Amino acid sequence: MTKAYKYAIVYFLLFSLLLVISGIMLFEHKIGFSAQGVSEYYLGSEEKFIVAKSSAGILKIVLPHIFAFALFSMVLLHFLIFTKHRDTAHSKALIYLLFSSAALEIFSPFMIIFGAEFFVFIKIASFILFESLVVYIAWLLFNSIIKD
Image (cartoon, rainbow, N blue to C red; front, side):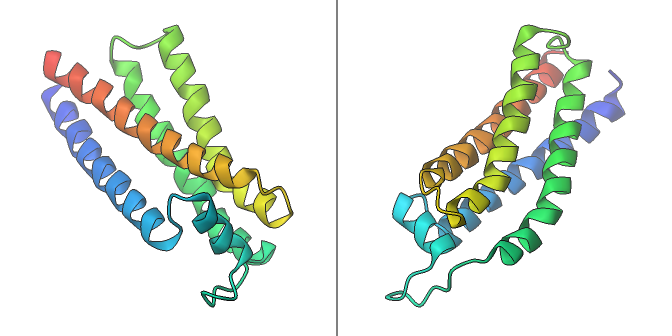
């Protein structure tokens, strides 16, 4: 791997870390990490003057996230090709987990507003899993660059 390519990956990883940190901060601020907070955010709360989300409102939020999550995940995982983790069962598991957690995180609000309140927990778990996997993959990439 060339030195310029390593620098590009390191800068991408730094921006990825900023994305993870800001994503966690926004999630905590807007929704919260409690089942009640997630439920109130999507289903509304008269006491807190929170209007329930509609499927059209969620769709407006989800559409750009589908592309952004997919592209970000693809780029992050693409960099694994240039490391020792290429073509391993570990990398395949990371691919499946990252895309599955992203899909659950994006689409679980629809299930919440359509009455499947159990998806409140899926929303929280998939968010935490997605963010954790991004940090873990970034660590794998950074570690591979340092050792190379």
